[in-house]
Length: 142
Image 1 (spheres, rainbow, N blue to C red):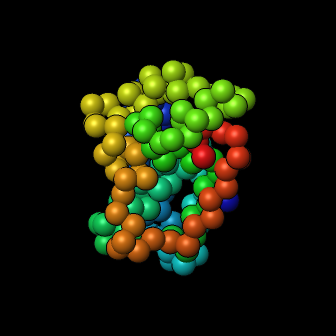
Image 2 (image 1 turned 120 degrees about the horizontal axis):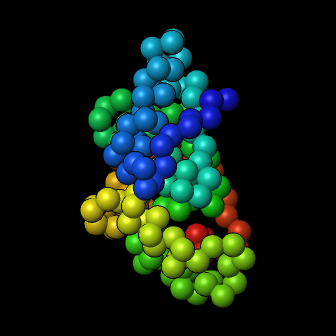
């Protein structure tokens, strides 16, 4: 298991953070591992990062990891998802008001519905790694 200590917003933004993650994949590949040997897991904002990293690797021709595991992924930072509104009173931990500043810092000028920052809007018709997604039934990120 390799835990990536990537730079978080506001000290960095999506493109640099994604590049740090892709660099880890490049190092693993250079060490003799193949994409079939690698899985990526992400929780919350890390889940969104895992998604957009795999999309970027696929689109660049780098390939995709054998599996993706997402734990309550923040895959839409735009506040458009219905559970961001319908479950706002049920959410025990976070609120979009708290998340909004983080979203803006992470996007750093990129439109919040751009797939690079909100991978839910990405193109999954070109294929994607087998993926396990878990989330609670009363959380806004559902």
